[in-house]
Length: 419
Ligand SMILES: Nc1ncnc2c1ncn2[C@@H]1O[C@H](COP(=O)(O)OP(=O)(O)OP(=O)(O)O)[C@@H](O)[C@H]1O
Image 1 (tube, helix red, strand yellow):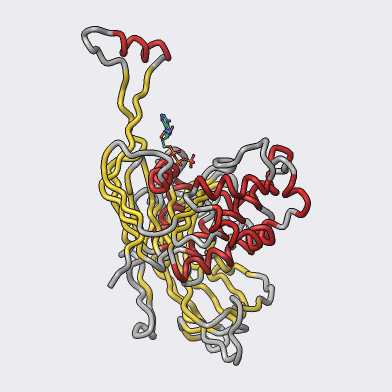
Image 2: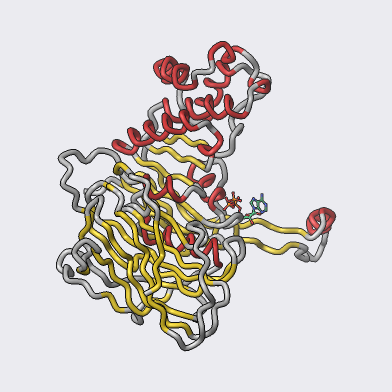
């Protein structure tokens, strides 16, 4: 049976917005009860649930309602309507500094903070050694926290939030402040919490979300805009954040020839772009054998072979691709700008045939997906002509007996050849 730790049903948070402060007073004093405000839904009718063992990431542009949602779940804000059910000890790291008193020492703040989260003094006593060890700020623990650097502050806040063994951990973007070693330490601890409880995290770091989360909720305008598997949602989100594209088109216009269709599903690619050109064919060719194949191993010399049909002249073309692992983390990102290949303008009505040629890196066995893209402009300012997400699924099958880490990379150059 599913063990539901968080259940949110139809919650909204409505604020009254006044054009000027005096309107608030006018409204209170007005005998006819005239309204001087407009209502603003910071969160609008949101429902979702999170089960034990699940980690859910929340994304969305600034002001989309992420923090308001988390604050209602942790009880810092009361919803204007709707129901929230939380089953388990909760610990939250919302705004840095929330729950801390600058004049008290770090030591005193540990107790203050934990009490605000609803934990007893005895409970904190049991976790104290772990908290101090985790924060690792030495003698500063006895100084008032207003004297702390922001890094020390994060260390202490995290140490408390994570080490009181919560079943539900809620983290709002705070991890990005700490140094790399401390971040890694936090991620290890979050992984532990995830095993027995649940983690809900807001982050703009799509890489961290891809490797941590089982599900992503994308908020927009206070509502859930999309929800689903990280690889799918994060791709779409990145397209949206970079190019303001909300809906992807399904790609039917390009044709993937694959001998090994049993193993990999080559449908369901999604694309966006302005339509001035599109990819017609795409295949991976093993240049050692000369044959098309979607199964590769490190060291194979391969060509990412594609044709593009141009509908309107593209005067400053950039061609590129991204190879992603199963979690959506980018493994190789490159394009003709990075590789310093200057492409000729692509003429209207023509079809072009190119190959990116490279020695395939040594990656951990598994499935990888390839995005391919054509843009027009400079690297800093360009328009996407067509970007296809997951255009080709590639299977890495290396013969190495050990498969630790993501792989060992042999840096190899990539060449673009016009055919
Ligand atoms: N106390 C308040 N009164 C009025 N409006 C508010 C209040 N608090 C938040 N809002 C508004 O609610 C909306 C959602 O804010 P929220 O902080 O939840 O967004 P967010 O997605 O967390 O943004 P960010 O990524 O910038 O942290 C914003 O438009 C914000 O201006």
